[in-house]
Length: 110
Length: 172
Image (cartoon, rainbow over all chains, first blue to last red; front, side, top):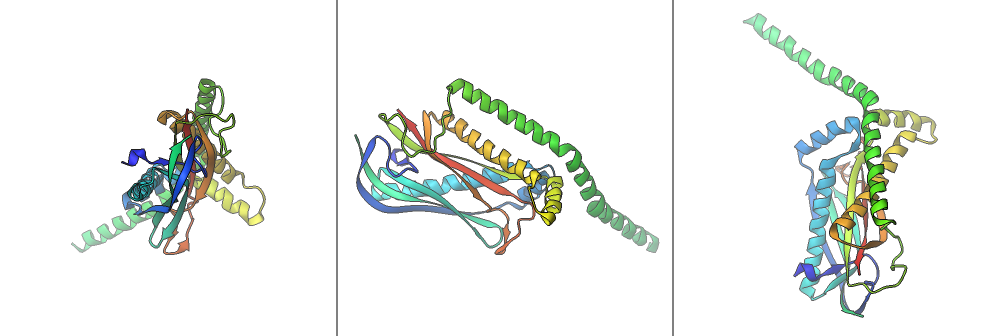
């Protein structure tokens, strides 16, 4: 079901025409970092450069938010989500909220 | 027995001393001497990956325009994204702190941010190729500081930054 939902961060999907707009679809998730990984990242900080633990954590969380957004779109009967945006906000205690939103639309080819 | 307890006390103090003075000191010196080699090797790898992609495609597959430039038939579109979290080393952080007293160009942070940005773009290129997209349009690069706020206060002591690059992959 989710595979059928196309996503795009442009206002229209090139090559398709929008026939109906179904409103804003959203998906979000809140993640906190694992204390062990936090300590390891702190050690990695000595040398600097990439902190892989955080990169992976944030990517995983963002994929989850995106997945939830697509589920929302599919439940409304949309076959595409256009103008997808990402927002991040931090909640108390080192937790981060990752939020994805866009407009659910029905598109037809041509 | 009293002597033993005293001895254990001394040993504990010694261990604490080692943990809180010797370790940060060695870590700082390590950072001062060896961090630049790590960065140089990362940068070298990045350059060779960029060169490989450019050579195999013959052009850059990322565009910031919202429509594909030679207008053509698209059969499928989808979101592509990639990210990286970077932080300066202790030595760079130290240099930056000193530099920020007098103001001016902070080269040590400059390097970290430049590396993060070009790495995230390169990852987007590789991600797009891996997922089978011909091109990525409407590419945006965002910066967020999500991992370093503690109880509402901005405690960005370690200077951790996250870069996110995303765009719409298109397939003919």
